[in-house]
Length: 320
Image (cartoon, rainbow, N blue to C red; front, side):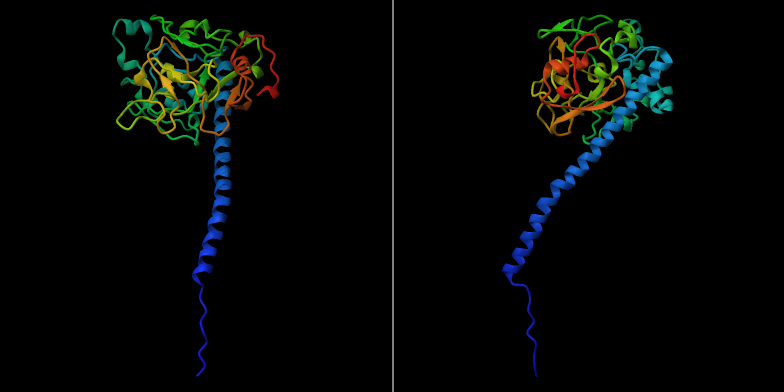
């Protein structure tokens, strides 16, 4: 009787096949990751376009840009533009009666962004404020952090202990304040006519990261945009700067953990860099509604020029 000899794979052949498969995976995985990041970045661009359009529609209805904040705890731009982001129901749950005068009298803790009368609005996560490239965070009271911040100018935020304690520093690190599209409501409205640099040369919003809390409950409030300090960026730090953000308190940030950038606390001038999880730079929406990708390597003078409203700088697109 004839018996056919069955031939299987030898160990060497099997190892070669496994090696080939491993090489193919190694070649394909970066391409898959790059494609996913491209899709996430595209969604991020779309989010910024929606924010830019909402700001335009707010201005059309109110003849000024939305306030950057209402002092420290009674609302930021993130609340004020909600009706123009198709979030009217969330906006209608916001109680806007809180202000500095009532606070001084000790009478409106419930009207803060984290108070009982406003948490319906502030705990609702707005997807258009969220970049899919980042990890979601909700550091305090179930109130989420987000990924977009308003341009507060080219210097810093000062702390002077009055109703205008969210005022921009007139000078900082050799930079002279040259206007910004967003400010405290107590400092007056910003109109389009005051943006003499031109809307296409003025950033409205840029990206930020959602700070990740530490392993034993340490807070990181970067991206916590319902709170005044978390709602802004200042261009005295370049995009994704390796220099630390300067926070009001060391208890408000937790550096170098799960991708958190560096930070220091306890300063009197507060500076927050625009940051993103995208490789090489970040997205920013301009006053004309266009969204541009700004590289980390941008010259600080150009970055500062893009953040001012009346600096009279000359900027060409090839500078960033």
